[in-house]
View (spheres, rainbow, N blue to C red):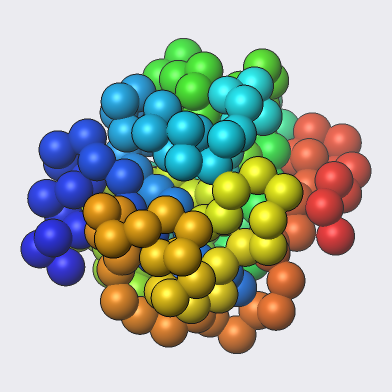
Length: 180
């Protein structure tokens, strides 16, 4: 956990197990680390990434939850913690390297115990994007992460959660499901 905290605080990216696949993560406010993730994945910045957190209070500075209808807010909070990612209106704090070319930001409150501990340790959400080059299958083991990215990337040891598919993504403004 100490190596993870060092990487997070020193603008480095890392891999870690999530609910279904290994993710690549970093401090969402570190442009340096985020650009490294995009380079590793060959992913355009315009697509945006997910912010994953241990609780909603860690996400609050990045979103304008009050801009979603109250009934939708209830659905959002009832789905967490869990494997549902919501697109919510972003705040001025949310960097464009997180939200991409959207006025919304993808956020999730996890129920994965290791990820919750990681977020609590740094008192922040983390970037969460699947650990794979664009177009390749997401890594499900640390060995697969190494085969994609080599030995230089810090891999946080741990087990995947019980999900078999990546999180559902729902637009919090209109409840449209974008990824089932």
